[in-house]
Amino acid sequence: MTHHILNGDCLADHLKETNLNGDYIICREALIDGPIQSGNLETFWSARAAYIQETYHDNTENYFSRVVPEFLKIRSIPPDAEVCLWFEHDLFCQVNMWFVMSLLYQDGIKRNISRVFPMIHDAGDTWKGFGVADAAMLEQAFTQRMLLKDDDLKLGNDLWKAYCAHDFDALKELAAAESKAFKFLPEVCKAHIERFPEEENQMSRPERVLLELIDLSNGDFAEVFTAFSDREGIYGFGDLQVKTIYDHLLLNNE
Image 1 (cartoon, rainbow, N blue to C red):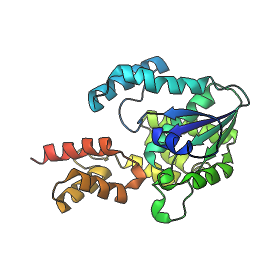
Image 2 (image 1 turned 180 degrees about the horizontal axis):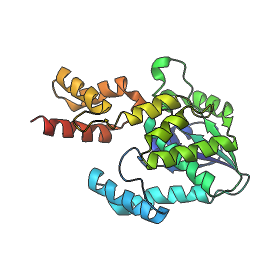
Image 3 (image 1 turned 90 degrees about the horizontal axis):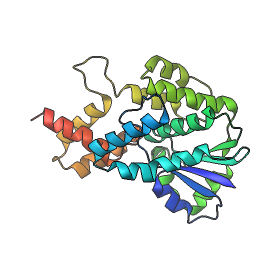
């Protein structure tokens, strides 16, 4: 059986329209935000659940019933099984993929792990990923999946560790690694690092862009969100992430 690990329910719905067989494991996290440093998975889940409840007002019961069980399925994939990682190129998806790869790497079980890349026919769709794909394109992406080497899996694990440690030097070094499994890795790591200004009084890259877009708009969030997604699609932020920054900027500029 093929185990398809997907970044979000939307992609799962689209895959059901294809002729691809296998079971779906859905990553329902947003590890781009919130606490990620924890000694073990149990305390990690607890910290994540508390953060999501406080920030996004989703109760912890949902986290432990809908999010954690999907990750636990990854740990139970048997040896020699085929695993396909369906993750896009943007930072949001990449961080989630690094975490998934760390789970697969750290248990030491040998599996046949591939990455499925979005079919990009237009440079303007680079960060839109699978969102612009129909059933035929998804099936084509699957047939062109790339089998990962042990070094690729280790790189994913190392990226996750550097990300958790907030180690920008390590991220820069890892971003220079030559691996066809990680397209746009230097750009993605650079975009992440630019979320954290070197000086306390400086603004992050997303903040600078959002403030500019707010000034150009009539303050309508939907308009600002669309413009931000078009301009900074590399982040892959959803409306919840953008709204958090948006509200912070408005509060500080009152």
